[in-house]
Image 1 (cartoon, helix red, strand yellow):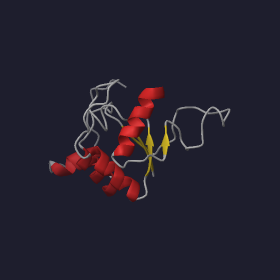
Image 2 (image 1 turned 90 degrees about the vertical axis):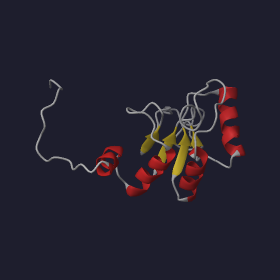
Image 3 (image 1 turned 45 degrees about the vertical axis):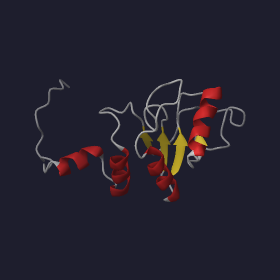
Length: 140
């Protein structure tokens, strides 16, 4: 499975352009995922020197990504005339998700249980999904 991971606000607190403090268990969780065979792509708006700082920050903590802002390490505008920064990842971990970023323990649990956040939350509060269609506020 290929997972694209944002940097600012996801691995570290968002202090862009500076590098914020590491979010609890972020790099430990990501290093565990790499050891378990997941391919991680660092997916960030950082470019140039700011990007190199983020990559080095991760390396200093023992976190190496499969690729950075591209699907494959060797892919890029210099090697592929059809190159685009739109990734073909199976999953994206980003603080801008609807509902925000779950803690890294929850993220790890979701990946290993192959469930959605909604399923996990329903289980934790003891609710079961109703089979009949509920009325919706959505007009369509």
